[in-house]
Image 1 (cartoon, rainbow, N blue to C red):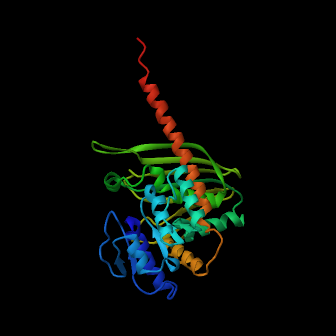
Image 2 (cartoon, rainbow, N blue to C red):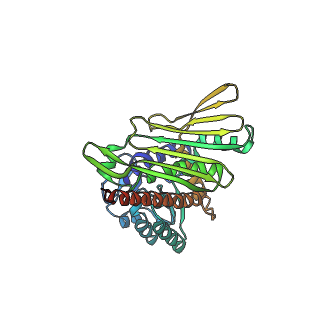
Image 3 (cartoon, rainbow, N blue to C red):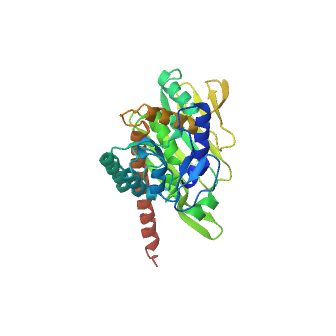
Length: 334
């Protein structure tokens, strides 16, 4: 279950049921959470174990949503596979390091799992409009991308510690989008900051910055500040003949996106539109599962690339930390 299951997956499944009657089987969703037993809510029945959940619904005909923190992902994925589940939607990130990624890949191959990663920004209407702008070439070549992901996350980061670094919280979404827009990339620079609240310090969970150079020459900068006093999820695309500035929805209370296009001379236009990306992602995933498609889900390769890049970013940051400690340990010359 996890926090994402309660706050995001369940409400979005309700929206999918309403929008596409008959796509999901009748009956309540079966939920299991070994850490935080889910409250009783309409449309859900609680199981006391994964084995009990498997007895409630036939695993071969059931989509499992794995919403736990990424550190425990591989072990639970193996347990689900052993119980007979094959269609599994996994929360991002797919893993937090290369060994974890290799273990997920090994489990997927061994059991023939059809895994989709909850990278719903790829299903956002805003992302689709940006992708169309890149493909159409109306504004010339894409040169630069900047993504800002700001939100205060003090309470949860201190209480839960469910993500090891700020790179694992918001950046997997943004990284998937920029890779889909500009193609493969290498890391140019990366940095992280601690989260500090009074006398409490949580290492590496305050802010994460990433600079990329894509194979086609596009440069990307992603900045995610989990200590920001304000919320912002924006993406700016610099073309030869225009700048596109998009704003993704920032909360589940308003699923509205905006896109501003600025042309040479300052001529600007603005579009505001509904953009409820997660139900759109789930709808597409369930339609695909219902058709028994055998090819790999499109979210998997991009998330594998994202994990590899984020692992390299964390390695660079850790090396900088070690270098900084060595400098500070050098005795002063007298």
